[in-house]
Image (cartoon, rainbow, N blue to C red; front, side, top):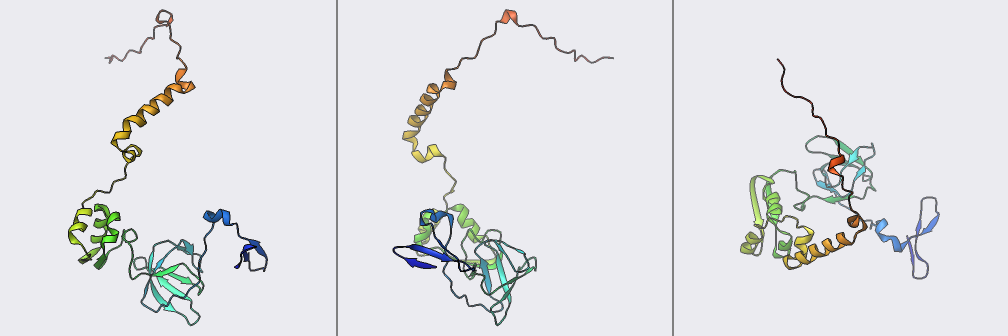
Length: 216
């Protein structure tokens, strides 16, 4: 990557060809900073993006894997705890993070012996009954919750956290106004002005229904 205030950002590929990075389409690409991740046998890592290993085995974002071995060149062998499947990654595979601490969302479907939950007051706006249940139900033997305000945490943990509809978001006072505006738009629509032709009952031929009387 080459940066210049006049030329913008240029990328250089493996064939040494350069191209200008379209900064006006930043939502269509991602940039990463290269860094080192110290690992040793027995460590746990979390995959941060879908991908494939050197043997074309599928790697799923959010999956937790245990480090089986680390070569001198930095190549890794990771193992799934349940399926025992092993994955081989090169030293330049960059979508890994330590799994010492994970979010409540990432912990769904996982079970461990003990859970340590760090939930300070800054996280309360994102706290509800569903999130809290996921957190405390991951442990088989014990759960430890660390917070700086226990009473408030219990209040937030009682919220259902259900998604609200569009009408609920605008508030009860504005619901009637929104509904009235929708009715006005429907009346103005050309389809609403089209009248369905009425049939003359005298010209409609009677329909003879089949006889469903059971026969002996």
